Amino acid sequence: MENNSVTHVTTKTWESEVLKSNLPVFVDFWAEWCGPCRMVGPAVEQIGKTMAGKIKVAKVNVDENQEIAMKYGIQSIPSLILFKDGKEINRTIGAAPKEAYIKFIETSLARS
Image 1 (cartoon, rainbow, N blue to C red):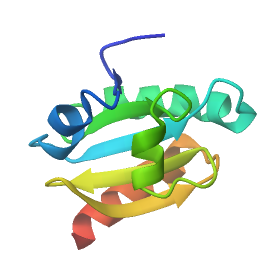
Image 2: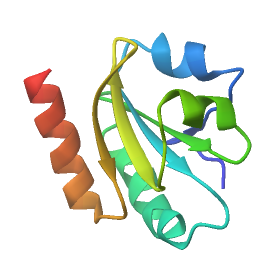
Image 3: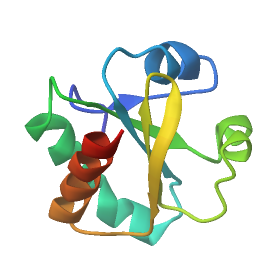
């Protein structure tokens, strides 16, 4: 499932990949057992391709990286958080179509 449009982030790589990224980072918090997360996966990957160069797209498996999930108060998944300059600027929870996520990203970035 690894591809160039999405970076799989772990507790070890979180700071370098997300907090220190010079591009805004759209992070998908997901888990293997979560049905809606699997539905969101392809949309997230397409966003990684269509918005390449504007934003970075990352995925965090909450089961394998519980410290990050706890730090950001992830209660339900999929949770998608947009980070800019190392800070959370907005979040959306639950499955949505790709277009809704793109609008969410563009609107959040325009306000930040």
